[in-house]
Picture 1 (cartoon, one colour):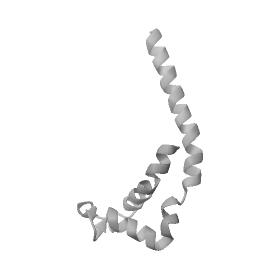
Picture 2 (cartoon, one colour; picture 1 turned 180 degrees about the horizontal axis):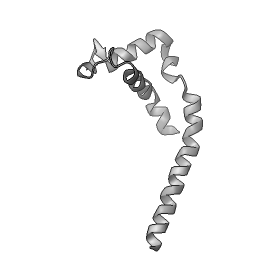
Picture 3 (cartoon, rainbow, N blue to C red; picture 1 turned 90 degrees about the horizontal axis):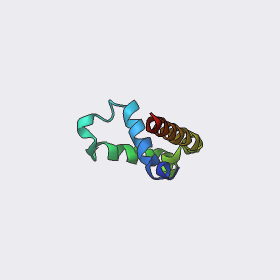
Picture 4 (cartoon, rainbow, N blue to C red; picture 1 turned 180 degrees about the vertical axis):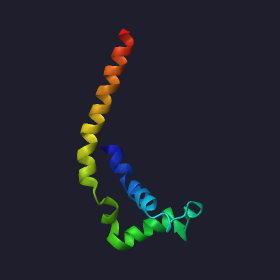
Length: 84
């Protein structure tokens, strides 16, 4: 969950860029007139800093069980391969 706290705002920006490719063409992603920075500015204008945290609750609720299953599968696979 701590990883999501750090990376969630960037994930919001990335997701917006992915669903609106005509507004944020790949060759302009790091320029101020288009791409990552302008997308972040637009999110801040529209929703303030809370705009970067829309949907964090469900994401955090999903993070713990999803990662727990990932660790469980890893450990079981490692044990199975060690015994083989």
